Image (cartoon, rainbow, N blue to C red):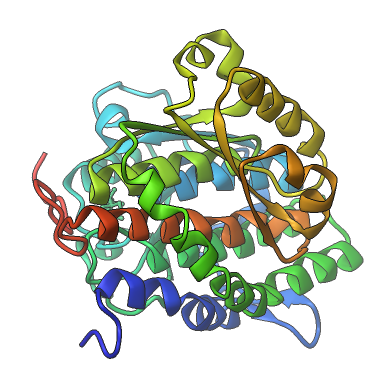
Length: 364
Ligand code: M6R
């Protein structure tokens, strides 16, 4: 049931403060500022290496987790798409942790990759949304996302719930490895529990985002730029736009622009720059300025401070609420979802059932 929403996708975007809140609540104790993951059937502290495998949007959640795990838990992380991983005969020293991320739990390539990792003596952890899935049955431990049924082919709430689980897991691994003390754990948990309320505020920007859609719907190509954990968000934004609006889009690491893609920039190409304030802000802003100097039309997605500092540089600026840098990917996922949704509506495509796509890809 779509309720009062025009499409399932929009309803699912709006459910995010609730379902992300529910997912986080299953894995943290906000009172004591600790994570409360279920007991693992193996020793987390003994893990030396993590491999994360998924497809599509779930893969981008995995890419974000690589930044988190490396930075907080100081552990070696590899991320790959399942269709490549399953055939490339990866070397996996026994005892490693292999994490599989899937909304459906039925994606054929991800399942095959899981079986390969198992054959290589890895501990298998899956993050799935649909209960009792094939992947769940073949795992050593399952962390469930509580997004509820996701009907729109374009994944939205499942993605932010995956990020929520991965954020909790990253804190837990960091703790198990002795890389963070309790004060730091508490700070991270607090940042995470603040997310649902900030997400609700982000949804208040819906009209401002919708106002950009008409113009963008006329574009032939769109480029999304981000750095660090916002780089996967740029890729996710581009994927969302491609799949429901059929506009060619690419997500790029902002710093990679000058190595080729900047040649694409002219006044016809909208560029979405995703840059919360923090460690990488100045770097991304300087990439934005390079694009503006080449007549690129920039939509700048930042926070209130970022908007004050550089909002005037861009053609349009969306200023999100301030939030701890750690959890910004959860928040910045929403404006790119809304943007692709409104562009698709402006183009008149079938938002919930885009051409050539299936919700669950159970064949190779
Ligand atoms: O069910 P899964 O998470 O394994 O699905 C993976 C991809 O097929 C999926 O994320 C796809 O990319 C979405 N349509 C993206 O919106």
